[in-house]
Length: 241
Image (cartoon, rainbow, N blue to C red; front, side):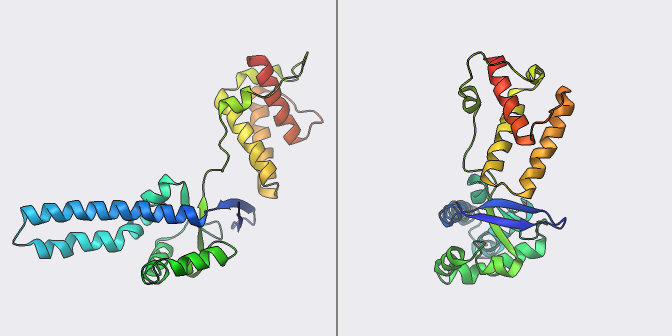
C-alpha cells in the first residue's frame, strides 16, 4: 500500500492511500462502459426518432458525451466520476486545497496523450514510476488520485470480538452513553493512527479525545490519548456484552 503525503495550506502533513493503478484502470473501464452505453442508447433513439437530422444530432449530443464525460463529472462531482465513485477514488490537489475547474480542465486536456493516443501505456508508465502516482495530466495540474476509504473496513463485530479480561473492572462506565457508531469511529481512528502515526493523525486522536471527554464528562487522568481511547473500547465491550 503506497502512501501519499499532502501538505495543506495550514502546513499540516496528511497521509492518504494512493489509488492503485489497477483501481484507476477499473474506474476507467467502468466510465468507458457507462459512456459507451449512454452514447449507444442515445444514437439508437436519434436514428429512429430523428432520421432526417440524425447526423446533426450526433454531433450535438453524442460527441460532447464522449469528449466531456470525465471533465463534466469530475468538475461537478468534486473529483469523482461514476467509475471513481464506485471504487472510492478521488482527485485531490497536492497542496490540500480543493481542485479548481482549471485543474480538472488541465487533467482532461492531457487525457488524449496519457490515455487515448498511447492506449493508456503512457499513463500506466508515469503512474507506476512517479512518487505520487501521477500521470502527465496530474503533474501538470499538481493533482493525484487517492483512495478515500481505508483498505481495512471495520465492522461492529471487530469490536465485539475483542477478548475481554477475566474480572476486568471498567475504568470509564460512562462510556455506555456512546453509541455503536461512536465506538466504530474511535476504533477507526485508532487503526488509522497505527497505520499512519504522523502529526496529522496525532492531532485527530487528540481532537477525538477532547470531544469524547466532553460528551461523557470524564477525565483521562495520566493516560495517553491513544491509551485512553483503547480503554474506552475495552470498557464498552465489557459493559455492553
